[in-house]
Every structure is written in C-alpha cells, then in structure tokens.
Amino acid sequence: MPNPTLTECRSPWVVVTRADDPWVTSEAGALRDQGGMIVRMAGAELRDPASLFTAFARELSFPGYFGRNWDALVDCLHDWHGHETAGQGLAVLIDDADHLAHADFLGVFISVLCQAGWKANLQLDGDGIPHEDWPPFSLHFVLLATEPTTFADGAASGMDVSVTLADGRLVATLTGADWPGSDLQEC
Picture 1 (cartoon, rainbow, N blue to C red):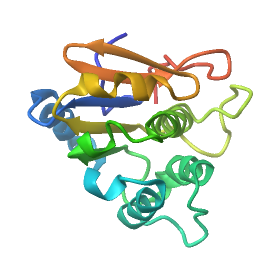
Picture 2: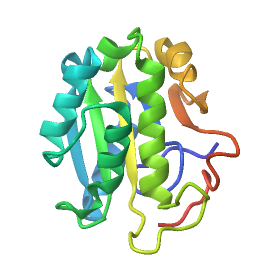
Picture 3: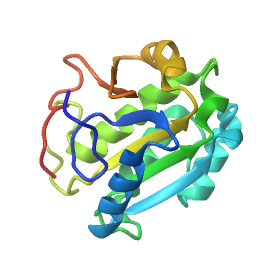
C-alpha cells in the first residue's frame, strides 16, 4: 500500500498514528495549501455512539435531518463536499483517540469512516459507476493515539475493512468486490 495522504483521492481512508508523527503536520499543511480543511475532534467526546454522532454533527455542521446512526453518518460525511472547502478536501483528526481503542463499536466506526471516504473520494455509486453530479473530494480520517497497534484488532473487525501496519501507522481501507476502485488515485 502506498504512503497515506490527506490530499489525494485514494486509500487508505483511515490512519491511526501517534500525535507527534511529522506526517500529520506535513499532510495537514499540504491539504490547507490546496484549499482543504482540517477539523479536529476530541476522542473523549466519542466514547459511545450517541456522543460520537453529536460531536460529528456539531463539528461538521450536519443538517438538522441527520439521523444519528451509522448509515446517516456515512451519508452526511459523503455529502459534505458542498461546505466551505468547495470540494477541495477534508481531513478529520481525532485527538486523544485512545478513548476509542477498546470501544465495542470501533470496528463499525472504522468501517463507516472507510465507507464515507470511499464514497467521497471516488464518488462511485453502489455499482462502481461515477456519480454524474458530484465531483470527488479527498476525505480522510486520522486517529491520533499513543500506540496505533492497540487499534488493530478492533479496526480489523469492521465489515470489509483491511488494516495494515506501515511505518508505525495503522492504515485502514475497504476490501472486496463491494468496494470497486479503492485504489484509484485521481480526484
């Protein structure tokens, strides 16, 4: 798997790394330079699904009809491209993500983030055909943790999620026939 990026429309969709990883500063700066946006969230606010949905809705200004469930989270993240960055990219950084390392919903959460990334980055419909009306935009998630490997089992338990440890980072993407084009590299 190639090095992760926050600026390109390619996997991996989720990266778990240390807060002091210089890659985070470099990639966040590159995303801002191209007109993208970084949203930071506190891991302590994401300890259960209800508070997680509330935090995402607040920090990303989801519409009032956000259904506060996993499918609605995928949809609202995927539809986010119309906001301030005008499709230039979004990275969600979760500080103190250690609060999530052993959450019973971690696999579902990582799978949902990967699904949202897949949809936004590739703008493919369920049949793998590009969406006619919406341009792709880079959407990636970074969980900042003390020890990324503590997320491996929980993240890998997500539906169709593949995790790999590379350069001290745990990276997650979707795998399988249901997720065509996961390795395309163009926005």
